[in-house]
Length: 166
Ligand SMILES: C[S@@+](CC[C@H](N)C(=O)[O-])C[C@H]1O[C@@H](n2cnc3c(N)ncnc32)[C@H](O)[C@@H]1O
Image 1 (cartoon, rainbow, N blue to C red):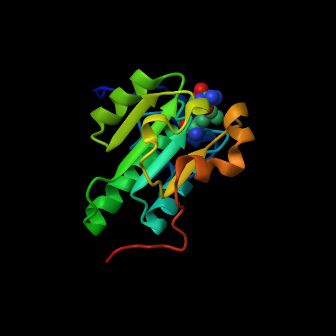
Image 2 (image 1 turned 135 degrees about the horizontal axis):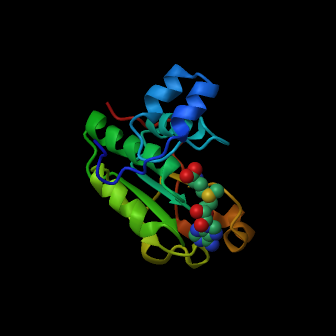
Image 3 (image 1 turned 45 degrees about the vertical axis):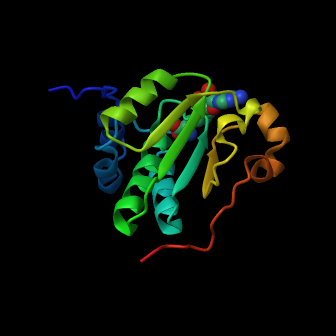
């Protein structure tokens, strides 16, 4: 039976048939999107980086259909459960697909705040949040001009090395 909010597609089946990757397939099986075939391992990679960092507040600039966002949101959720962190949150902004992605994250019960927002207008409502990790996949011209100052603009700190709590 089709799960509510699931973005259904036959392509994962085709992808893993062509490129058998049991570990990746097991991870991706939980997801509501199709695998991103150009960067198939980015999602899990981001999940594990965010877990290793003990990230609590994560921002993704350009969540698109929610492929990487799903892994990042699960990471902050799992960090919260594992280390007793309160208020962990994944923030995703984009200028497209926001309603659909918000609905999917809600259905999957993930701690996510999805905002329809142009990165040119950052930090906007996110100005008081100290982000542990900011991920931007793709060049957003105006943001990128200030890309080197992104942490300054957002007032973020990137917690590295790990600050895992026991
Ligand atoms: C390459 S996609 C991101 C893919 C995503 N990381 C994933 O794997 O699912 C880039 C996204 O950035 C968004 N984007 C481009 N310019 C933007 C801007 N100025 N503000 C916000 N989002 C923007 C696009 O709409 C697109 O969804």
